[in-house]
Image 1 (cartoon, rainbow, N blue to C red):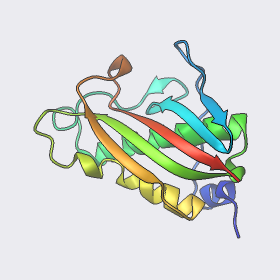
Image 2: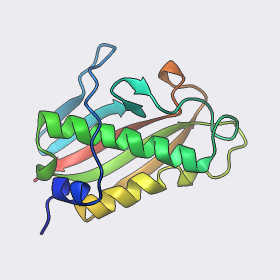
Image 3: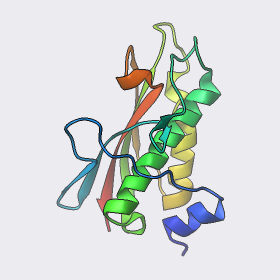
Length: 149
């Protein structure tokens, strides 16, 4: 069976370089078999790729791309600190900046959920929340929980 890093490579997906925290927090914490990854942003090498508000500044497809990139940033931290091939996804919580009347918010994590399922062979529990504001005006932020195997 192919490992997660092999599946990513087979799909032509490159992980972004992990970005050092800009505030007082650690990128991830391990508690027993669980690994909690701090909120990751839709950035590439500290360059914000997605900013603004769903429905005003970007559409659902772009929200899905933002959540996906934030999820790839979580992968990058896991691979740097531990080993991406030694974890399984447990939970994903996506925060997306939205206008109050947003209707398709629940679909913002579709791309990330598909990738998690394809790469790890199982999808995690999912929560998608609308936010009126996120740090630095980013479009989305993702928190993840993984299990060490």
